Length: 62
Image (tube, rainbow, N blue to C red; front, side, top):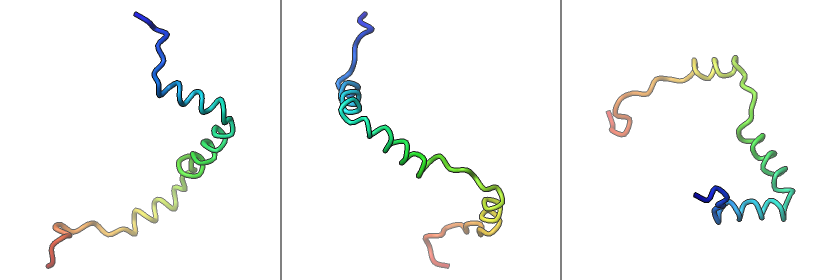
């Protein structure tokens, strides 16, 4: 079995990152912006307490 196999997709991404090293920094910046956030426990608690429970059959009038 050949354990040195590299898929076309992996080759493409590796070559892309080698040609454009600034993409790693852009990726990290985007991740920090959208995903890596510090949670504010007080804000989460207020948000949870302020929401009304969903009523059944919300898509029907009544």
